[in-house]
Amino acid sequence: MADIKPFFLWKHLNKLRWLILSLVFLMLIYLPFAHVYQTFVASFSYDLLDSSEKALYDLMETLTSPFINDAATDLDAIKGSTWSGNFFGYKISDPLAVLAQMAAGLTIYWPFFLSGLIPIILTVIFGRFFCGWICPATFLYELNTILSLQLQHLGIKVGRKHFDRKLKYWVLAIGIAISASSGSVLISMIYPPAIIGREIYFGIALGGFGAGLVFFVLTLLFDLFVSRRGFCRYVCPGGALYSLLGRYRIFRIKRIVENCNDCAKCNAVCEFGLDPLRDDFGQECNNCTACIAICPTDALTFNIKISDDENQGPGHLGKAFSKRDS
Amino acid sequence: MQRRDFLKDLIAGAVATTVLNSTVVEAAFSAQSGQRYLRPPGALPEDEFESRCIRCGQCGEVCPNRCIEYFDLENGAKSLNTPYITPRTKACILCMKCGQVCPTGAIKPLERTAEDILGYVRMGKARVEKALCLSYQGKTCGVCYRACPLADTAIKVQLLEQPVVLEACVGCGLCERSCIQLPQAIKIIPDHIRQTA
Image 1 (cartoon, helix red, strand yellow):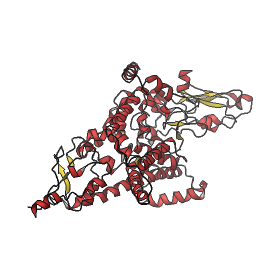
Image 2 (spheres, rainbow over the protein chains, first blue to last red):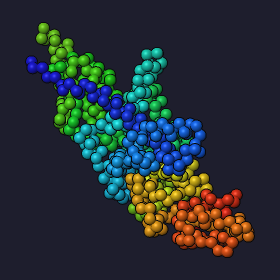
Image 3 (spheres, each protein chain N blue to C red):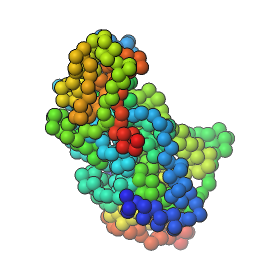
Image 4 (cartoon, rainbow over the protein chains, first blue to last red):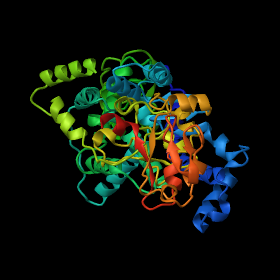
């Protein structure tokens, strides 16, 4: 049989994904410091700063001076978080922010709607990619998963419960309904990436975390002791919206049944508890490529198609086939 | 507002048994602290502002004066993480950057011109407490007048530098911030308080 090999770069996408996740997270830490530095510059107050503030000023000046002329205005080029941000004059917003704002205001403010358009189009093409590739909460949640594996290794009991994945669609619907009835974008209270973006800013630039951090720590504990990656799988309203938008995504992962040896490592590594081994990715898959990276026999690749394959049965390198072959 | 009321009834009817009941939502989310605060310059009227603001925090992140702070739960869950300014702590310098960065138009995008500021900024209006004001007690002061970015348009002084607030005052709060009396003799009364009172 002809060898069907996946494109060799797919296997390394997982590393690229971790790089992007780290960069987004570092960016969210860098921006508040940049803002504080900007206010120092704008007020010409260097000689009034205390030693730690002077150290921050010097550090930020060293970091940014090669790229800008005037910190007070030029550093405005990048502002905000993944919830909603300014990127060199372009405003980009989370589709959930757009939906919740439309519900709360009962109107459509077109400039804001347009700022959510690019993420919406990308989600329709790539599915729930935001959850795996960009979300600053994912960065912490995946580290949390690694921690849970370490704890398990030490003999501490961690949670592995399963719930119904449809739960998060209800959270989305009820969250939107509450936003509409209260006339306030309350869904941002329970949406981790929005919380992370705000709380990092509050913690660094305003000198104290808020109530959002308590909620986020609770979700971390939930993931640790109740259900692995449970919040993203079962509760997150943003994840629900992305899953719906990405239901007919055209860029999806596919199992090459000829290469598969049924080792089930893909199922074990999948953060969202999906079933690549039986070709069941569904609308929840975020194209994180962790399964492609771990597959020992190169049996997973990308495919351009708007639906998953039917269950192709056991892999041809597995026991069921090798018995018949030999 | 009628559409919202209709929607409330709709939801309350559909999910009558649980938390979704709109009266419960109202009771839980509309607690007010009674705190005197201003919204950023160019912000929409209070109700509309709360429904427009998505709590992205960018207004505070561009504020060169760091006068924009954020509510935690003290002003009710409806105001959670929305921006506010306490003029006595730090007042607005009317740079208008927050409106330009706001993605939803909760703070209107305005230029830093007299027309835009006088035409669209409605943070509140200054009020002089004559019993506390040094100038009205015969000790010439005039600090509030000097601090006003719209001097002679928003505030004028009479004999002995006695301040008189004019209709054009936009409520930036620089007069309150600069007042040398304790407690301050000039205060910004926010628009959302003036309307409900």
